[in-house]
Amino acid sequence: MSSHQSPALQFSNVHYTIDDIAILHNVSGCFPKGKITALVGPSGAGKTTLLKLCNGLLSPTSGSICVNSQPIDQFEPPQLRRHIGMVLQNSPMLKGSVYDNLALPFRLKGEQLTKEEAVNLLEQTGLQRSFLEADALNLSGGQRQKVSIARTLGNQSSVLLLDEITSSLDRTSVQEIETLILRLNKDNGTSVIWITHNLEQAMRVSDYLWVMMNGQVVETGDPSLLDSPANEQVAKFVKGEQS
Ligand SMILES: Nc1ncnc2c1ncn2[C@@H]1O[C@H](COP(=O)(O)OP(=O)(O)OP(=O)(O)O)[C@@H](O)[C@H]1O
Ligand SMILES: [Mg+2]
Image (cartoon, rainbow, N blue to C red):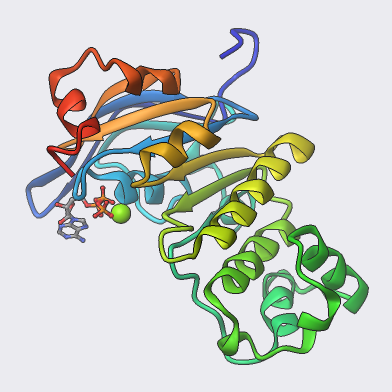
C-alpha cells in the first residue's frame, strides 16, 4: 500500500462480542483504498461478522473503525450504506421487475431512476436492456448477482463488500463476475473487500489479503503469502486440512 494514501477502512483493536462470546478479538489492519482485498479463512472465523462491521450493520463492542480516516459512527447509516455497498452470496431480489429493483435505492432517497439510467447500470454489468422488464424473481443466479452489483453502481459506492458472491455460480458466470469486479475496481477506483472460500480466486483477483482464524486476523499482506505462509495454522488451512 502506498504510504501517502489513507486506507478505505482502518480497524484498530476491534472486539465484537455477543452474549459474552468473543466473535472477533483484537482485529487491527487496513483495507487499502482502490485495491481489492481478499478476506479468507475457515468457516466460522468471523469473516461475515467483520464485513457487517464495515458498513455499520454491526457496531464494535470496543475498538475503532475509520472510513476514509473518519470514525465510522460519524456517518449517518443511510449515507454509510450508500458509500459502502454490499453484495451477498444469494442476493435477495424484490418482487417486481429488474427496473423496480434497480430503482429502489433511488426511491429511498426520494429520487427517480430514468429508464435510460437503469439501462446504463445494467449494461455496465454486461446485461442487455431487454432485462429491464424481466421478472427479478426469475433471474438465473449469475444474472441476479449482476443486478445486485448494478444496484450498488446506482449508489456510486466507493467501497464494495462482497460475501461469497460467486460460490453458487457456474464457471462462466464466475469468470464474468470476476471480470466485472476487476473492471469496476480499475475504471472507478472502487475499493473491494471480497470474502471467498476459493483460495485460487483470492489469488486471481486480489491485491491484498487478510487471513482470519478463530475471530482473529492471523496474516495480512501480499496474496502470494498463501504460497508460503509463515503461520503454521495458515499453512494447514491452505493445504485444506482446516476449512
Ligand atoms: N448473532 C450471532 N449470535 C451468536 N453467534 C454468532 C452470531 N453471528 C455469528 N456468530 C458466530 O460467530 C462466528 C463467526 O461467524 P461468521 O458468520 O462471521 O463466520 P464466517 O467466517 O463468515 O463463516 P462462513 O465462512 O461459514 O460464512 C461463528 O462461530 C458464528 O456461529
Ligand atoms: Mg460468512
